[in-house]
Structure formats: structure tokens, C-alpha cells
Amino acid sequence: MGKASQKATQKYKQLLKQKTPAKPLLRNALAAFFVGGLIAAVGQVFLEYYLSRGMPRVDAVSLTAGTMVAIGAFLTGIGVYDKLGQFGGMGAALPITGFANSITAPAMEFKREGWVMGVGTRMFVIAGPVIVFGTVTAFLVALMRMAVRGGMQ
Amino acid sequence: MAENRLGQQTLVFRSEPALLASAAIVGPKEGQGPLAEFYDVVTEDSLLGEKSWELAEARMLREAAELAVKKADLRLSDIDLFLAGDLLNQITSAGFVARDVNIPFLGLYGACSTMAESLTLAATLVDGGFADRALAAASSHFDTAERQYRFPLEFGAQRNPSAQRTATGAGAAVVAAGGKGPTITHATVGRVVDMGLKDPNDLGGAMAPAAVDTISQHFRDTGFKPEDYDLILTGDLAKVGKAVCEELLKRAGLDIADRYNDCGLMLYDHGQDTHAGGSGCACSGVVLCGYLLREMLAGKYRRLLLVGTGALFSPGTYQQNRTIPCIAHAVSIMAPDVVEEA
Image 1 (tube, rainbow over the protein chains, first blue to last red):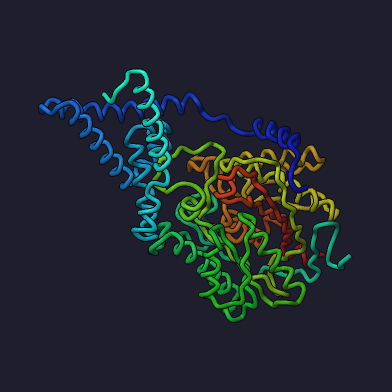
Image 2 (image 1 turned 90 degrees about the vertical axis):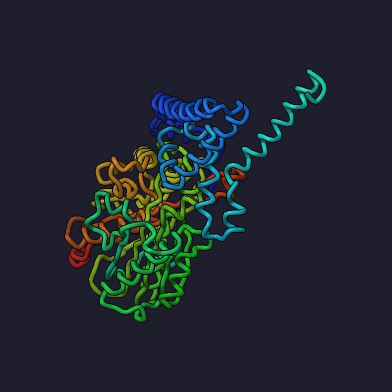
């Protein structure tokens, strides 16, 4: 039998598609919308609170992000965030709480392999690519901005 | 042709090695499933008081092995060979248990087909006169498999409806020359089949053609008909793979629908949020060593064909965009009263 030809693969994929239950797209989209919206609303509450206490906007935004990271890490620690992720999909993964989840989860998971080779090397196993490509993209966008508007400002 | 071969891929065990006793241990989730009453032990949590999930898996395997031997009224020193495997890198669960039980050991890797593979080899060695008693076993653990193959446990990734859940548990069976118990009469060793699929979220779909290949070869080699079996059971094709397997066999002229099931679908209830169903070495391991062998002794099944299915890939081959080679081994088991009649 060995390895199937490309033609056989295509034919088999068609059969497989017929028998595979469709992803519940509408349900997933709605769940993502509400979970993502809820997380954003919580963030907004913190932002408004910090602003109302007279904090400058730049600082209030940073503190809000920090607060949300702490909440995401806490919910990961008590075993809630993975369930939120299964329910809300991208709505839970995309906000900064999801970023916190992606770092806290491996940090917890690989503690048994030790602080250096476990936590240290594995902590950014999921978030690593986000940081790498985020930084590269930010650099490219900054270059473009400089080209269009000139200078460092 | 070698005298104990039939057709291209089937081995005949003329001395009909018996399954003297078996034991199945499962985790809490499996213990809430529909087969709960058939397991010897349902653990309270998935860590069993150990420091890591890997240790917990090894302990399950060891306890299943020891219990199977005890249920056969034997001691570990009465066992000539220990044949076992699991899903972890370098099959460490099996290796560490082999250290503890101190029985000559052959480590096996057939991914989720390991239970069928270990039974096949145990029957072969017993039938060939190389062992009086062999212990066949396999284990898997949801948490150890997740962290090795997928994501850290607490990471909030959404699963596909076609994804499967690795079963937590271990199954072990004592295969012996003579003695009472269901007997292993034939085994069909599978070829590796690769349909060119790459999605690790749909392993049932990837493995189904391997099961089809082995099942149809089994019937060609032996001349049996589906009606000769009360139950034909694949290891862990789950919902999608089972539907495809059934369809492909039908197209090949083998209609097994009325006597066909899949261990991955028997392990959990629909409400348990396990997506397409169960998977892992323990999936067919505990369904066989817990449920099936007991029901055979109770007279519910007279003859069954267990087809263990395995996906022979790793996270590395997946990341390198390679396809998923799959395998299936079929083991034919007969109830004791049927043997006597024949």
C-alpha cells in the first residue's frame, strides 16, 4: 500500500470532507465576539477607573494592559482560561489576556523540568513567534513611516 | 511458505495461546464513561499523588501489569517476557515499568496500535514455544500526550470537532500456553499506509485507510467472512475515521456496519466534550482488557477482531510538513466455549 499518489490523496480528502462534521462557524464566531467583547469591556472599566483617579492616559493604558495580563495569568493558574479558550476561541486568544495565557501555561507546565531548562526555555514556546514577528513587523512599519513622513518623530 | 502463515500478512497461532487474565486502569474522565463498571481501577485524579504526569502514567502501567499477573494467580517472576509500549518519547513509561517489574522486556512502539502489537507478539512468542507466559501491555495519558504532542495543558486553544482525546489509562493481559481464557487465534500484521494527509487534528481520518487495508487483508488471508465475528472493533478511529472506514470497506465489498464499532467511541459519552472520541494506546488497551475480555467470558461475544490503529508521526515530522504514515494490526480473539466446541 505504502504512500498514496497525489490523485488518490485528493480523492480520499473528498470522502473525508463528506464525513467530517462541519465546524460550527456561526456559534464559534458569536462565542468569540462575546468573549472578546467581554474581555475588552473589563479592560475598559479598568482604564476608565485609572483615568478617573487622575492618571495620565499613557500611564493608564499601560497599567490597564498590566492589569489584564495579571488577570489572564491568574485565570490560567486556577485552570479557567483553557476552558474560556475552548469556548471563545480567538475571542479569548487575541486579547492581551490570551497572550498572558500563552506564557503562563508553558511556565506552569514545564516547571517539572526545572527553572532553567523547563520554565526558562519553554516559557515563550507559544508567545515567542508572536514577539519575534511582532517586533519585525513593528520595525518594518516604523521604516515605512520614516520614509513617508521623514525624521525620527 | 512458513507453516504458521496464512496468505500475505496473517499469522496463525495453532496452539491457541490463552488470555489468562487482564487488567485495566483508567483516569477519572474515562471512569465517568459508559464502560466505567468494567475497569479494575478508576483513579481519583490524573496525577495519582505523583510529582509528574509521566510518573502517574508509568504507575498506571505498572499497576495494570501487576494486577493482570495477580488476577492470573501468578507472580511477576512467573512471567517470561514483558511486551509493552506507550506514546511518550523513547517509550519511557514502558521502560521504567520494565525496570520495576524486573521481567525480560521488549519495548514496542506502534503509536495507538501498541496493544494489538503487543498481543500479536505475545501470542507469537508463546505459540512458538519461546515463552510460557508473556505479559502484553500499553498505556497512554491525556496530560503527558498533550504536553508532548500539542500544547501545555492550561493553554486556551480551541479544538476542532474532528480532534480526539488521548485516553488516560493502562491495559495489560497475560498470554499463556494452555490455561483457561479467551484465545488468540490469528493476527494480521498491518502495512504502513499513508494517504498523504497532514492534519494531526484528524488522526482518525488519517488512520482509517490503514484499518481498511488490514481488515480486508485479514478476510482475504483467512477466508473468514464478517459474519464469523460478533464484533469488529477498530482502536481509535473515532467518529470521522469510523464513518470513513465503514464506507471504504463497503465499497470493497465488506459490509461490516452491523457488527462494527470503535473503541474511541465506546470510551466516552457524548456529553463529555471529547470531540470526535478517544484515542491513545490506552483507548483500545482498556476497552479490550477491561470491557471486551470480561464480556467474552460472560458469553456476550464469541469471537471478535480487534484492529489497533496507530499514526506513526511526531510533532517534528508535522512541523516539517510531512504526511502521516499509519498502521493497523488485527488480532482475532475467540471465547473459551467456542474453542471447546471447535
